[in-house]
Length: 447
Image (cartoon, rainbow, N blue to C red; front, side, top):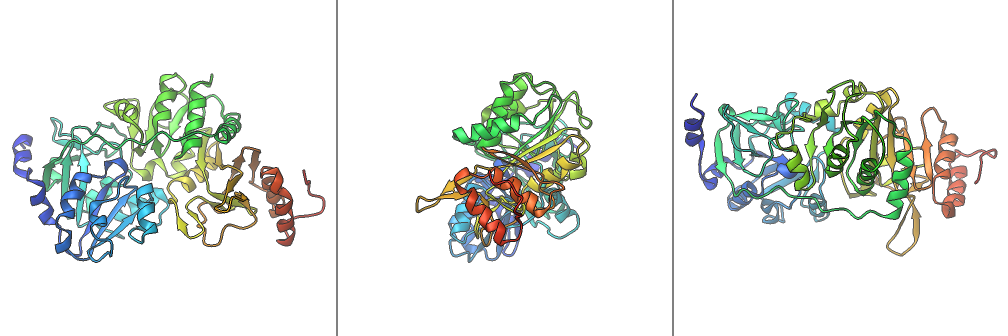
């Protein structure tokens, strides 16, 4: 095949490519920063003539113009597998729905035929000499979406880094129906998150748990990034990486010599991930870098794969934890905040890992709208809150007041351990509630 001739044959204006989308189609956007605002804007121009179009994505970082053009949802139903800040705002306006999933199962939704894309709109890097387009910074289940799509439309963007795999990080021109050359807009960069003194206290407690040769997973948020910054300035040696998200702090740790991957049992000397989000520092680091390996999420997040590396340190945030040990990381009551993502995968996988630890980290308190101090360690989860990690799977919980290990503990032992790391001013009330719930005994410590 003459790849250049095939490229020219399939190259069309963006408005021509959008004609492939029909009423009732399931249209799949890319994932994370690989969502194409260029293709979305072109589809938005047609939206009034289409009905019943379903759009799915994973953590789209912007509000799609297709969705904003149809606030009454007469033409488009928009769904996100893991809510971004933009999707959360749309959800508050009843303009976006969440698709629940345990992240490592995502590819199976397509392989088993539970969902099938009619049209896939995917942003890619320029074609190489072998006829391949690289999926860039996200392959969690983009390859499986493309496998099922009846029509494949790709936007070629010169700003997309070539992220080496792993597995299935590219698509061949023979699998593509339409090629669009986009506006080459740079990938969206995440803003730097403010780091509080409490974040630093929690991170310092986490740092005490990390040993030389540990294998790191960091979730999204200021606190995991704080841990990364502290590791970069530490004397830890031969750390490995097996994570769902790669962020800027991994670059800092690598360049400081903390990450080598030499002690990993799987993918030795490789930083394994399924998507990356950060700044240009991260995207430039990833481009053609053989020390990094991007894989679909059914590999990176499979708990049994995770557990084959020793000393897995899974570090994630939460919104609240109840005295039974249930973790809510997705919603505040019925208000949707995020998704299950890989938190459950990595807490479970860390337990399978020899010497592994799965840490749920949260500040002990928050201030409500009335200015009252409220505990994030609660007797019961807020009504309507989604359980992200069941009490039977939860492992460690960390606040600025300490760390609680919950495995093999009864309900009263869990209540005691969690109350001991709650805010001191709120512990007495938690004890009263624990007594009322029959998970407290008179011999319990109260200080």
